[in-house]
Length: 295
Image (cartoon, rainbow, N blue to C red; front, side):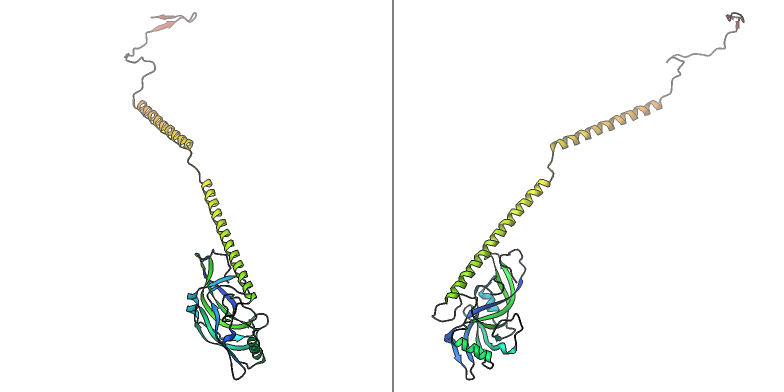
């Protein structure tokens, strides 16, 4: 069932609702068997209505009513809505005939058969104006309208109706020239107040969402590392130092290679001087004094 004021999910949502509309005393026709035919009952009209169960607004556009006016799964009319204990057959007091689209509403004729005591009691209450509303039972899907900022009915399937004390459709009175009862005016005010509250809640949620999005962007910007010029300078100095070191290593390697390819010079011979070897001269050593004499 759609939740008013959500507006965050565009997916269609299923709903089940019960809306009551007032029927006119001017359209009553007595039947020979004690029954009653109520002609031209407005079952569901264009507008934004709040059902009695969920208390959430849902807009019913004319195009949806026209497209689904003939989509009835059950035509039964009951003396009460389903809920609590199951309904028994004696609570089936009539049926809806000839459902159709007319004047921006789904309209039908209600035949109260008068075969059971409950049906005869309902006939009496309607004739005396005590029971003035029929509440249609229906399901379908609701779509969020971003322009009107509310849920709108899309597909609608009708499952019958119930005769009730008072309905939810405050603007759809069928009493001809008679004014709407005071209760209907109060219901309209409640609808308007609920709709305004839902609209205000949507606006607040949209503001909160925009604020949250701004904060997220600020956090993302703060967590992104900025480009530090000092880091760039250090990286360049390190690259220059590495290049100079590689150049120095290449120079040393070249020098070592050059030294290893040249012939060595004897340590006992001065550079550039040639010397011939000769046999040693004969000598004699005095055994007592150790003096050496040449021969």
